[in-house]
Amino acid sequence: MTIKPVTTAVFPVGGQGTRFLPATKAVPKELLPVVDRPLLQYAVDEALAAGIERLVFVTARGKGALDEYFDVAAELVASLKAKNKTAELALLEATQLEPGRIVSIRQQEPAGLGHAVWCARHVVQNEAFAVLLPDELLWNPAAPALAEMHDAYRRLGGNVISVLEVPAEHTHRYGIVTPGAIDGLVTEVKGLVEKPKQGEAPSRLAAIGRYILQPEVMGILAAGKRGAGNEIQLTDAMAELIGVQPFHALTFTGTRFDCGDKAGHITANIALALEREDVGPAVREWLRGQLI
Ligand code: G1P
Figure 1 (cartoon, rainbow, N blue to C red):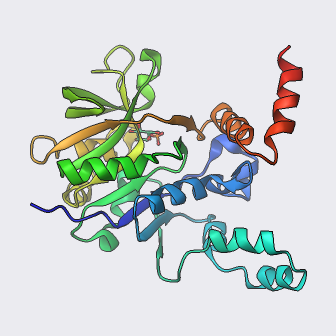
Figure 2 (figure 1 turned 60 degrees about the vertical axis):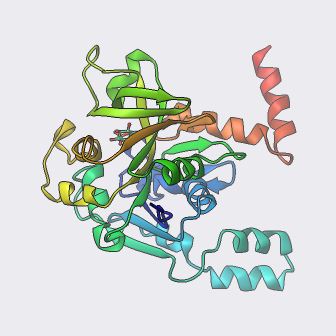
């Protein structure tokens, strides 16, 4: 059986970003920069590197700046051209997507991640699709997370999610896997539970915001069942696919930054700045002075 490549990715970006107030009063958290690129750009780059053609943003009221960001800034381009600012123009061009590749959908109520994904059902239709949570910056330039998952998906079919071992005291923050057979980085998924209580997690393998899913998950989400936090949880809908379709977890081998968290966002800025030729040396020098 040949497995069709995945070409659609859904980005749930409707969250209010309350952890970053007051900044997020006017700026969507997905546009907060990590060095000089918005957080969302990293997830978009990762999706494009995996061969994704259609990008679906599930937004919400007050997040119009996201549409602005992906639009052509005609006045800015004209003024940069007039000033002969070629480097800046090249930056804009490199992040510009062809017309028609982006679909923007409003999630009309904050009813959970599962609900956000379900809002994209008419675009996804009857094909496997990816979901990327942009808060999770999965940094692995040599082997981007979704591309690795896509390779695994071509071999395994079914559903593939990205996971990482987290400390036992953090399992209550995540969707946690009940592991089955292990083959290198691939673990068979026997069960999934969203935010298990302290001490009740079936393992320390946590879902870290990257999913390749079969479209049948949309039918399950349509039932609108509420789970943890009284929200419609993607994890609960995925759990219903286990045993019906192949379901695997792929362990991520790069560096993960939880940019939904202030410390994680600051760490990502420092780590990625240190890798850069332009700002790296100055940041490194300052850090050295702080740590003596
Ligand atoms: C969501 C998912 C959870 C996953 C996590 C990864 O939770 O529901 O299963 O482990 O993202 O960041 P949230 O962080 O939105 O509460």
